Image (tube, rainbow, N blue to C red; front, top):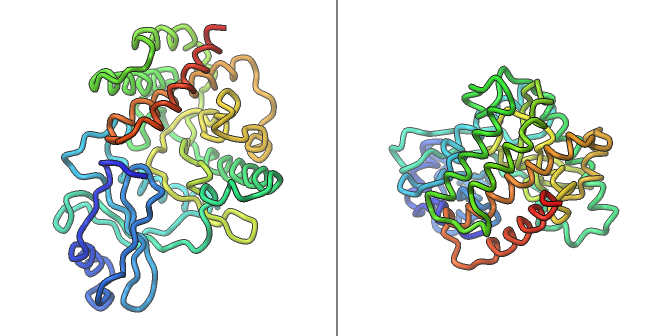
Length: 325
């Protein structure tokens, strides 16, 4: 996926980063040691072959001159903190961190190294699987996501700054930030921004039911799951985590946005039954937040075509029709 947030580096810069992380003796000779992993949407990631033949992944944050959406600021710090939490407090499989560097001495942005996970990316191969296999993987995603959501926090809001006492306050701030991002760049939603604010205010009391902050991954799509031998072996990309309501997780999106997920299979794996009326209202608000992000981020990513924008706008139209009904 192409995006101006991808901070590509020269082979010489990559060699310098390898030397700092693994020592000069692991710097590869010749060319062809680096391959960009192209399916990510935000950070650039390289698959690197070290001199001894070991394969690792290097992930680099966006360059400092590129404006990102408010919730994406400090995303690499969020991911590194998330990985520590997940390893210490769950049995969900995630990569180790070999080395992290935020000094900006070798690169103009933070970066970190992790092992290359052998296996297939579920998001890439999902369309080639039979329906039963896809459903089984959605159940596995649900079970793993429940493990992540079992982590309890001390407050609601950003992972590194859980400053809100209530989920209503935290989500309202998140929602407001996304709208402010869109207004700043003049993104056309097809609807007035104030209409979105009124819609949230009208349904905000549904958020008061959430009283305990939980770790919310929010980005556990099939494309962030690695598989081998019929099971998910590793979960990657944790930079969008926050403290909030587990019902906001990506796998539940299909409840109101069927194109996004197999919500029924995910819910079975998670261990959640049918949603109550209040939970359905919250889920619609969370779906609205996601679609607004997907519409607005096209401007921040510098997309050269309107494919994602047009698709997300259609999803927004469908969701707004549900709210109107």
